[in-house]
Structure formats: structure tokens, C-alpha cells
Image (tube, rainbow, N blue to C red; front, side, top):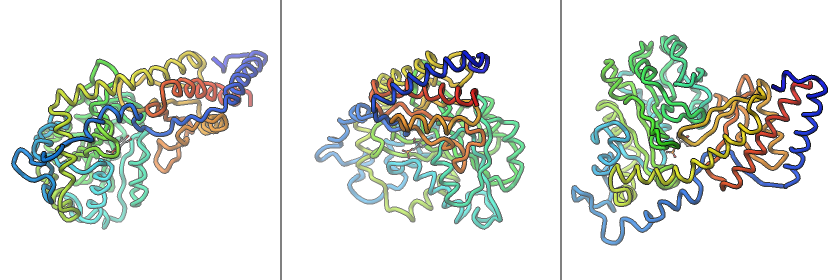
Length: 422
Ligand code: PLP
């Protein structure tokens, strides 16, 4: 433990780590571990899709011409293909274009302008509204709230989902209209919600009758181990608890097929789907159905989808292993950082000692290594403890991930030594 070292030992250790850091910086590397993008090799896995659906193949099973306008809810066989993954019947699914974030954004804007089923008035006409934001969380969720003036209330994650005692207390306030949830392999902590967490979210008493869970299941099939974690079906849990309209479920194929040209999904209760489609059909005459057909032709069925995700896993798992190996070999038992080895998702979340995260990011930048800004995993970009770092190893090559991980471990050690010496 760094904290237990004598002054002389601390100085000697600091000199050694400083020398290692200087050597790392002298390599003049340009490394980027900031965003959870698929690597080119992952996109190559879906290269075959670009030739689909192919000449003269433009009819859906129902005989609709996918080249034409229409079909706002999405092609029926596409909804059937993703029904198991989304945990909803095909009639309770809407297929959007390429970004689930856009569907989340639209749902919030429509809630502000029109209200949702069960609203007494549009959310935007309330004097103030708030969302619960489990932390660490996804910066783009927080950016939507910030954009539209929705107050964000952080709630700590526990290792099996958000702190439910806090959540249950906070949702009694009628101003709390929603909550962001990334229930499986969360961004960035990689934790998955326990069955009890899902049941409590589904059944808790909320002050707002039109409260919604924004259930962003972005990493639903993104396993990194054989375990293939399953979580409780939130739509069923909400229906069983007598709150059938509580959850808006979102997901996409951004990190299954092509991040810029995938399919996004909204799944929910009958009333919510009707509500969504009524708004969506004012916004568009229909989505890109050729891309929907392309996905069915390429993936074929749920087994095809799972097999495709195994190929992603084969590319991603070694990168995650490399990060956690480097952290373990440099940082184990030093008291400078805590992390967990993700069993799915796209991130490694590292908690360094209080007040050290921005220093680590600055040291890394100075050595040619870009990390996500400290604070990004908190609402308003402000981590009150300045301790959480989000590492995104998917995009760089394996050798770059190895170099970057070594560099990150050195920066964390150096920042810890500096604050211990201060
Ligand atoms: N939701 C989460 C939790 C994410 O981490 C990401 C991307 O990193 C997205 C949504 C973006 O999804 P999409 O590409 O479908 O807009």
C-alpha cells in the first residue's frame, strides 16, 4: 500500500515510477481510449451486409415493397427477430433508424411537449422535473437532460444496480418523472441489475403517476464471457406489479452490426407503443426498411444473432483482459485504484483515490494518451469525488490497448504517489 510506505520508501518508489512514466512519454505514442466505438475488425464482421438485400430483393414477408414509404412500426420479421432479445412481443416493438439515442431523445422531447400515457399535462408545463441518474453513468443520457433543463439527481450504483433504498425514497417526489437505467453490463461500471433491483424498480411507489424508466439495454447481447448474463424482463416485472406502462425499453444493433448504420428499437406496453407511434408518424413517413431487410437477411434468426455476437466477443475479450491484466500487475494492493473485470459491455470503470482522476487524465494526455474527461460519468460532467475514470478499449488495436493500459496504470500510480507526498 502506498499509504503505508515510509517517507524514504515513498520517495524511492516515486522516483522509479516517474522514470517509467518518462520512458512511456518518450515513446511519443498517440493513443485514444475515450469512446466506446467498435473497431474496424468488428465492423468488418458485418461487411457481408453491404451487399444485401441484393438486386430485386425488396419484398417483406407480408409483400410490402421495402423501397417505398410506410411501415412506421418496422418490418414484422425484424420485430420478430429481435423479440426475444428485447423481451417484448413483436407488436410491442418499434424499429427506428440507426440510433437508439435518437429514440430516447425523441421520447423525452415528446414527453416534454405532449406528456406520456398517464400524464395530467406535458412534462414541460410542470414547474420543475427531475430524472434519477445512476452514477457512474452514460454522458450522453446526461447531456439530453442538460439540454432540456431536466434536473439530474445522482444515485450511486452498488455492484448490482442502483441503490434502491435511495431510489425508492427519491421517487416519492412527484417532480421525479424518470430514471436512466443501463441494466445489463452498465456503461461504465459493467454491472448488471439483480432480479431484486428490477422487481423493486417495477413495483416501487412513485409520486409521479407518469414516471418512466428509460431502460437502455444497449449491451443486451454484449457478453465478454461464457456466462451470458440474463436479467429479469422489466416489461413483465412492471406488468406483474400493476405498472404496465412504467418502462420504455431501448436497444440497438449499433454494436452488433454497424455503429453508423444499424437498427434501433423501442419496446414497451400497448399504450406506450401507441403513444410512440402517434408521435413518430408525424415525424416520418417511414424508416429505412431496406436496412431492416438487410439485417434479417444477414442475421437470419436469433441463433444467427448470438453467433455473430460471439465473433465480437472473440475480438473484444482479449482487449479487456489486457486492460485488467495491466491494472492488476501494476496496481494490485497499492490502494491507488479499484476496478472490476467486466463480464460484458464496452467499458472498464476505474475508481482512483478521491481528487486524483483529473490529475490522471492530465498526466495521460501529457504522455500522448487520451482518456475520457474526468467527470464525464457524472451529471453536468462534475464528479464530486473526482475519482471515476472510464476506459474504452474497444477501438484501438490490441497492441495499442496494451501500451495504453500500461500508461494508464503508471499515471494512476504517479497521481497517487504525488497526493501521498503532498
Ligand atoms: N446507450 C448506451 C448506454 C451507450 O453506451 C451507447 C453508446 O455508447 C448508446 C446508447 C448509443 O446507442 P445508439 O448507437 O443506438 O444510439
